[in-house]
Length: 134
Image 1 (tube, rainbow, N blue to C red):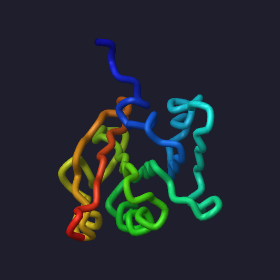
Image 2 (tube, rainbow, N blue to C red):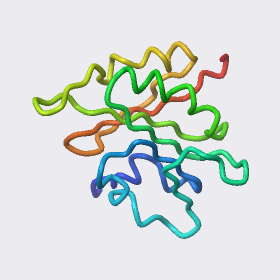
Image 3 (cartoon, rainbow, N blue to C red):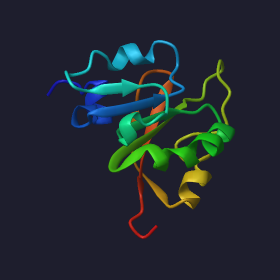
């Protein structure tokens, strides 16, 4: 079986309205071109009041998580995919988050991490879902 593409890993093919926030330079090129009819936005405004099926937020540290996490539910559809992308630790990049630390803002708001993927040599991503009891 061939390696999964980034679009497959992120489950973008199932989405029609995408929002990507604070993406690093060159990232949008990695996920485009998209299928016809798919709308991609890098600004968190709701077009015609419709929520997004897919929201990916790039964060560099805990402060970014604290600032950006509360806005996600306002723009995400009830069954949408929420991904937070974070930098892998490296000598060239300082961060205070990793796959196990730095997500308290989301966890305390009732979100649960359900999967993790590698985007590239610099970035990883965690998919979160809202607990039904929240």
